[in-house]
Image (cartoon, rainbow, N blue to C red; front, side):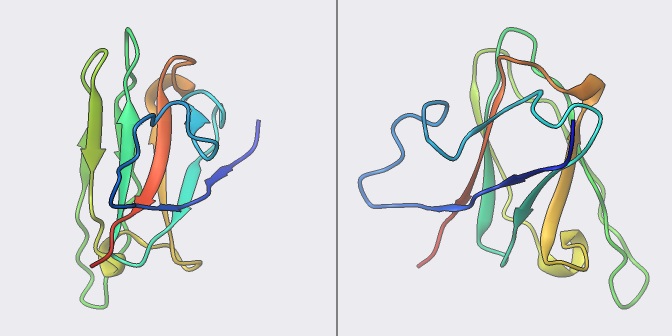
Length: 120
């Protein structure tokens, strides 16, 4: 499989009522051994719908201008919806302005990922 880029959707006042059913959501195993990516302006969160055995997610850290990094690894709850982020661009954005993450073991077919921009 290949890297999977998530389309960032904007949060709306009426809410996102079906994360897994959203047209921009990706299955947890869509990238296989590759990465998931999404554009990040510092106001983006990752919504995860964990299935029966959700995979731990590791976010790729980026060195900031002072050589510091921030590590982040989370395990979404079984049959739960999790919201992770927002992500500080100087600690998580790659050179293309994207956050990269990798679910353990290539991800699970019953997990769903959706990148959501939450603005003022």
